[in-house]
Image 1 (cartoon, rainbow, N blue to C red):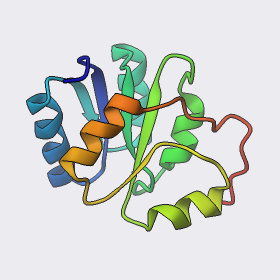
Image 2: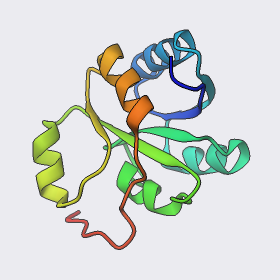
Image 3: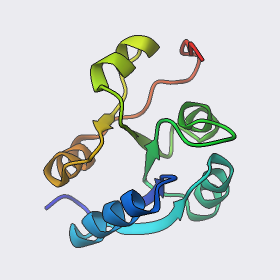
Image 4: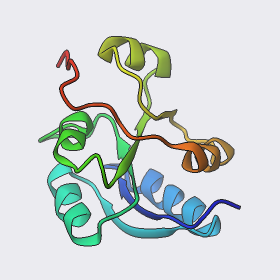
Length: 129
């Protein structure tokens, strides 16, 4: 098993967030909070200082996941984006490489991603929004 990590979930669909929480806790990780908006995510991240943020790429209302990711400290937190869109089309539209999982998230893929996640190179990256 991988080393236990402190994880913040940013997901606006409660059923998905709770399923992710169960998967993470069953895998030995600590879920430090669940946020349904980007503003809430920023507050929770500042307070809890998670190792990893699981971030829905397209949240309802307000800031989107990519905008929020830019506001987090990239040297201290790693981000794994979640998307219901085809993974390769999201990568191509943004022209950058980042950790990304397709929804519905498969437990084995999530566990593997947590073991190998890398820093998110969004600083200064092109955003076509």
